[in-house]
Image 1 (cartoon, rainbow, N blue to C red):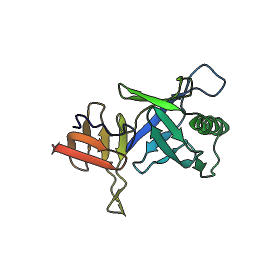
Image 2 (cartoon, rainbow, N blue to C red):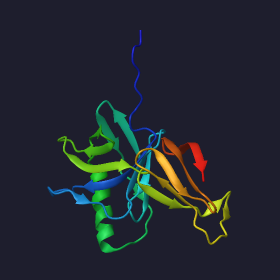
Image 3 (tube, rainbow, N blue to C red):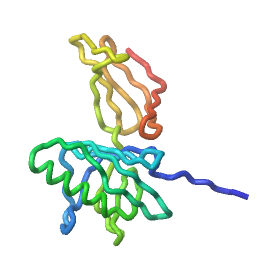
Image 4 (cartoon, rainbow, N blue to C red):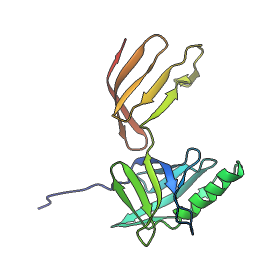
Length: 182
C-alpha cells in the first residue's frame, strides 16, 4: 500500500536571486537588478538575468538537478550587469542539486556547496495597476497592490484602500481571498 506521496518541490515555483558566488570566488555577492528563475511543471526553466530573458530545461532525478545550457535574448546593459549575467548563466551550468529550507532555495554544485540563493518572488513586492482587460488605465490616481510577507495583500484602489489574503499556485496561479475595502 502507498502510504505517502510527495510532489516535486521545484515544479511550478518562481524565485528571485538574492546572492551568488561566482566561480573561483569564496564570497557571496548580492544580486543587482531583478534576476529570476521559474521551474515550469513541463521541465522548462525560464527567467530573467537582470538584462535578458532566458530559457532552458531542468530535470530532477533523486537529489540531482540537471539544468541545460540556457538560451537568452541578446540585449545589452551596464557592464556590471553583463558581468553578473555571465556569472549567473555560467553558474546555472554547474548546478548539481538544491536545498530548500525556511523559504530559501539554494542551488548547489557537485561538492554540495551553495552557489546561488533565491527567495520567493512575490513577498515584499509592490505593484502599480497599468491595464484592465488589456486597456490602459486613464486616471491620475495610483492603484497599487502590495504582497506582504505574511500572506496578506494591501493596496490603494482609485477610491478606497483594500486588504485581503493571497496564495500563489505555481508560476502562473494566484488566488486572492477575504478581500475587503474601506
